[in-house]
Length: 115
Image (cartoon, rainbow, N blue to C red; front, side, top):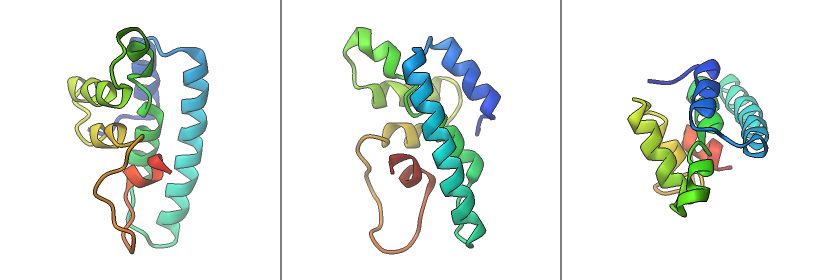
């Protein structure tokens, strides 16, 4: 499932995202939306909704990881999976260290969020 913007904000509340992290996340979401929208307009097959949701949730594990010391990208991926966001989980997991990408051709939502 790809969550709406409103659902992303509900998850930020549910996981008590700190205000400074939320402000960063909102900015990343805006940029991902613009990049994905413009790539799509130029004929590249990317999902604006998926890129935006991935960007808004990329640091969903950051606040809880501050207390636990866990890797926030891995924790965020688990949070996504626990909330049935299987399409968003890989984006969150790879927002710090991108894996399996092509240098030539093809674009995907996780690359947009990583960027």
